[in-house]
Length: 70
Image (tube, rainbow, N blue to C red):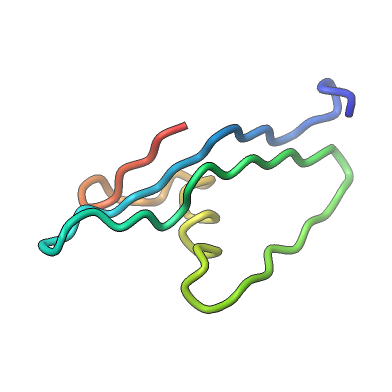
């Protein structure tokens, strides 16, 4: 994959939420590359972290309770 054509390059994304019951890992070690001109679909079961992934990429997760690491 030509890195010059990448519009998004995410390595080892971790998003966790700190709750009263402890830490919940919503996204654990996600790697994602998207090339210019390409489209992707994010598919998974309920609670798999699709929304959290998208919000994290847009930097829309409030801290706290969310914590992002990359």
